[in-house]
Length: 166
Image 1 (cartoon, one colour):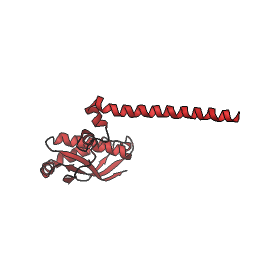
Image 2 (cartoon, helix red, strand yellow):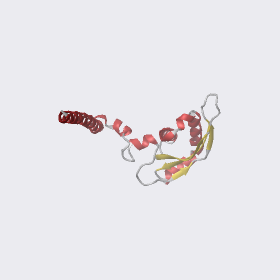
Image 3 (cartoon, helix red, strand yellow):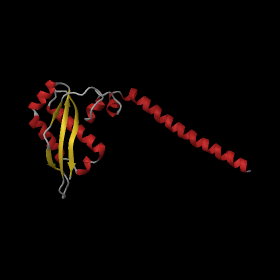
Image 4 (cartoon, one colour):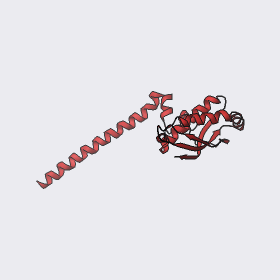
C-alpha cells in the first residue's frame, strides 16, 4: 500500500507540473503573437523595443544608441499638490537631443521648457514621484511636454540629475 500512495502522489505531482507548463506556454504564445496582431500599439508597450522606437519615445528614458548632446536644465523647487500638507520637490533635469542644432534650438526655448517643468511638477502629488515607475512616468510626461514646445527638434530622453521630495 505504501508503494501505491507514492505512485499516486507522483502522478498528481506530474499533473500539476503539466498544468503549469501549459499555462506558461500559453503566456509565451500570447507574447509572441501580440506583436504581429497589435503592430504599432505593441511597440509602445514593449519594454524591449529599439532605442529609436516608440517605447523609448514614450518613456523618456535613454536608449541603447550613441549618446546625443545633453542640455542641463535649470534647477527648480516646486510646491507639490499635497492637499493640506506642505510638500515640495527640488529637482534638476538634463535633456538629451539628437544634434547640436537641436540643442541650440532648445536653449533658445529654455524659459518655456522650464515653465513646462514647473507646471507639470506642481500638478503632481508626493506619491506620484515614488519609485522608479513614478520617476519614469514623470520623465515621459516631461518629454512629451518638451516635444510639444519644440516639435521640430529631436528630443531623445530626459534624465533626472537631482531630485529631493520633502
